[in-house]
Amino acid sequence: MLACTRAASGMVLDAPSSNGPFQPVALMHFRDAPPAEQEKLFIQKLRQCCVLFDFVSDPLSDLKWKEVKRAALSEMVEYITHNRNVITEPIYPEVVHMFAVNMFRTLPPSSNPTGAEFDPEEDEPTLEAAWPHLQVHTHTHTHTHTHTHTHTHTHTHTPFSCYRFIFEPLAFFSPQLVYEFFLRFLESPDFQPNIAKKYIDQRFVMQLLDLFDSEDPRERDFLKTTLHRIYGKFLGLRAYIRKQINNIFYRFIYETEHHNGIAELLEILGSIINGFALPLKEEHKIFLLKVLLPLHKVKSLSVYHPQLAYCVVQFLEKDSTLTEPTVMALLKYWPKTHSPKEVMFLNELEEILDVIEPSEFVKVMEPLFRQLAKCVSSPHFQVAERALYYWNNEYIMSLISDNAAKILPIMFPALYRNSKTHWNKTIHGLIYNALKLFMEMNQKLFDDCTQQFRAEKSKEKAKWKEREEAWLKIENLAKSNPQFLMYVDSVGSDSPMDMETDGPLLDDVNMLKKAVEEEATQIQKDQRRERPLMRRKSELPKDISTVTALELHRRAEEMITPHDGH
Image 1 (cartoon, rainbow, N blue to C red):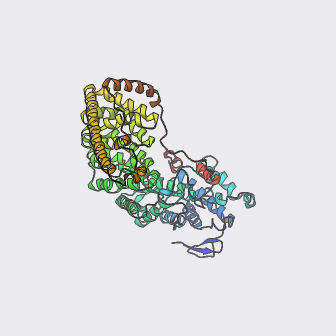
Image 2: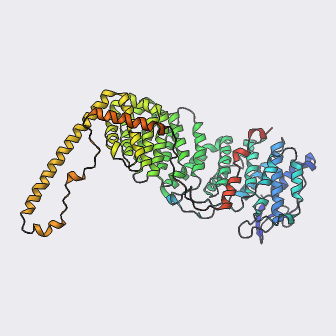
């Protein structure tokens, strides 16, 4: 294997022949080498790319070396993309070693807050110093077919003084090129997993998984695609990959509550779950119940919730019998004081209801709608609004209609009580719309619920009256005390009846129907407009260089396309 040693200005390669430190000499192009020499040249270029440079303490050092390395990587990307039978057996260990030397490293401590303090909408991600902010060279080399060699030749011999105006020296060498080359290597028609499995083993996968905690979202994007390709091509590593991802999740849930790559790992798992064979293995069911569902209780749920919800719904589409434990777990983890998180739960619950079987819905509808009744009564208008939007979903309404005798008695008190007392007028209209749908669904049941609610309110009033009379007796006894006048000023005059805050009691069912009709008609126009259920970003100034770097980043899926191969 090749050995890398550190020199004063960075890392220097000691080749096996050890003729001295590596020199920044541009090797000949593949097109200029005889076919018999191309394999040897390929290995030389791979070894040339094992030199590491310092992009942090002295980013402007070794510019000539960095350009040589960048040119070699670009040429190798082109070479394996547009040529066949070039990945021979001696190439495999060299490619894996080059990737490991360049990418496997100990990640620095996190510079952003951890847990709930980190807000992905507000906090800027920390970008990897060696990643390029200028990607024009990468694009030219990777996607130009006609003039590839001309461009490579031009870049290699450009006078280095021309680069002095570039204050972002990251354009000279790109970890992105290393990832892209490795992905092209995995995607090549010449790639043979039986040979590669000697080098891409469990240790390699473990080091790859460690990098998912990188704070740079561009690196995590390439890691996601790389790990997914490895999972697809190496059957013997699949169980190990799933196990190690489980371990990352366990540490995240029960120990650290901080990991930057949870969303990317869940995205990989989403496609893996989609390919699970039926019936599901017990191992996969345990993964849902013991790993995915507990992820809902972590404070930083907003960072990865869309990917998590997708994974959960995939499981329920595969096996509907998992619906009951899934819904009950969501109700168990339901947020009590975090309203934005509660909105996320409502979003996910609607996705689950979209795929639920009617037979499974019956098992969970009572606890489910008891929670929805609480949400409708929430003083946070977005929570109440999101819950009431369920009445716009045709499939959910069909499920409610089939089980109205159970659901309406649960929902009616919350809807009726908040129809006038909720502070937000939009909520009033949405509640009246829900009441109208219930009324059209089953008129007799609606009338029965109204009368029952009135009877319960009358009982409550009678209880309050009894309590008031009891307090009056106590007050009269207190007045008989000689010291009563000394303390009377400090005694409040409010009675329990004065503090009653329940909603209005309509004297007649017809009055309720009339109010429902009027309010529901008024709100129907507003219902059709989609409202973004997210926090508004603040107007804080942004880091321009970070924003520019993320805008210029091209996702791995965009670079590695099927038509690239032959």
